[in-house]
Structures are given as C-alpha cells and as structure tokens.
Length: 287
Ligand code: AMP
Ligand code: FE
Ligand code: FE
Ligand code: ZN
Image 1 (tube, protein in one colour):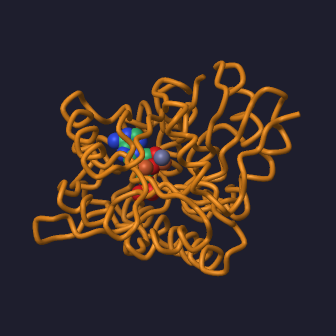
Image 2 (cartoon, rainbow, N blue to C red):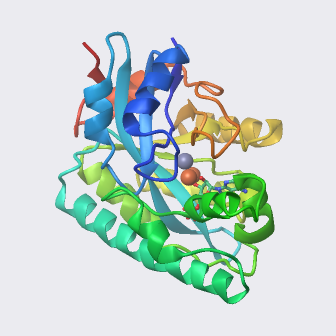
C-alpha cells in the first residue's frame, strides 16, 4: 500500500489542476492520496470526478494557523484537516475570510516588491487565479521566474520571499486551538504538518505539541521532506509517547518543488485510524 496524505493542486499553490494531480497520483502508483490545498476545499469536486478505479482519495485541507511557540512567542503552524464536513458553517466562514485576507496580503507583498523595481503585477496575478483558490507566495515566486528575475521558485524564496526577507508579510492565521476544535466539530481529524521543519522558519517546541494533543490534536506528520533524521526521530518518540497518529507525506506542489508524489508515505494502519475517527466525509474510491 502506497499512501501519500499531503498534496497541493492549483486550488492553492500547486501547479497541477486537481484532475492532473489525480492522474499523477495514479501514475506514481499510489493506492490512496489526500488533496490538502491551503485553506480551501475548492479542489475536492474536480479531484473526485477524475478518480480512476483503484485509486482512493482522502479529502482534506491544510490550514494556516498561529501557535504559541513554547519559547514565549508565536509562530506559524500548518494543520492538516482530513475528512471533515466542508459545509460546516465555521469551516466555510474561516476559509472565505482567510482566502480574502491572503489576496490582500499578496498584493501588499507585491507592492513592496514593485516599489523596489521588481516586475510583479498583483492585480494581473490575482485575476489569473481560479475562483475560490488560495493565493500564496509561490504564485509570486512563479511570476518572478516568468519575469526572469529568479531562476526557480526555490531561488525566488531564497532571495525575496522567505519569512526572514524584507518583503515578508504574514498571512492571515487562525489560532491553532480554534482550528483543531473547528475541524473536530466538523467531524474531521487533525494532523500537525511538518512541525519540526526548522529551516522554513520558527517552529514549536515538543511541549506545545503535548498541549495541542491535550486539546484534541489527532496526529503529527513525521516523515516529511523538510524533516531530517533527528526531527523524525523526535516526532516519532513524541507521537508514541502521546499516542498520536503518525503520518508520512510528500507535500507535493507539482513543479513548484522538486518533491515527487509518494516520496514519503503513511502506514496503512495510520490511515485506518484516521478513517475510523472521521465522521465528516468518507474516503472516496474511484470506480
Ligand atoms: P504562504 O502560504 O503564502 O505563506 O506561502 C507558503 C508556501 O510557500 C508553502 O506552503 C510552500 O508551498 C511554499 N514555500 C515556503 N517556503 C519555501 C521555500 N523556501 N522554497 C519554496 N517554496 C516554499
Ligand atoms: Fe504550499
Ligand atoms: Fe505546509
Ligand atoms: Zn502543504
């Protein structure tokens, strides 16, 4: 069984449409995969419609959240929500608010860049994104690549768009405990994404994860391309200690990143634990 529980489409900052993502998941030999676009479920329907026989889809999303970092400050965390009811009023409201805020924020970053002479046009960029999709820094990165200012998305992040850079503006983020409760109330299961991806920016301490587990976090993403051996070992031990579900996932973003689908995978019994707990929507099998 090959299971990859974290991927992105053009509904957020991936480069595959949901249908292309499904086709690539099948071609990669996956048995089950999750679509987890940032702050939207707008890719779900097209992904379901494209599912071939033999491939199963876990519908999910990755929520932008803010958390105490355990050192007296705050940091961004990403929360994966699986199999929740996408029509739950709180979910619909939060996503609409976040997506609107993210468009304003992208325009602010673009304005700062344009003031420095970088060739970015926020209006044109935002007008070109699918309806109900989530705008993110990778869209600006791709624009910089198209304009010949950066050689790749990674290069654009390294030089202009990273969290420590001069153009950085934080995105709209919900307190993580609110998101955990919201997804639980919508019948979903929550997994903390790439919690110890230290090179991306500030991360939470193990004590924070303990506290999140206490308030209902279901699992942690252990095997992730941005986790080195040490981070994986720490998270695995923590998850065992706290009786949390452990997942492994590629966090595939199409050509925005070099990671391939199925590069990291989740054990079947862990997927079973997620499916057993969820009461929002079911895993869909292609027919
Ligand atoms: P945003 O949600 O707009 O703050 O942008 C965060 C997204 O940018 C992440 O989900 C990744 O897809 C991508 N990202 C973050 N850091 C990097 C990086 N160093 N190189 C390439 N992509 C990145
Ligand atoms: Fe992303
Ligand atoms: Fe993430
Ligand atoms: Zn992701």
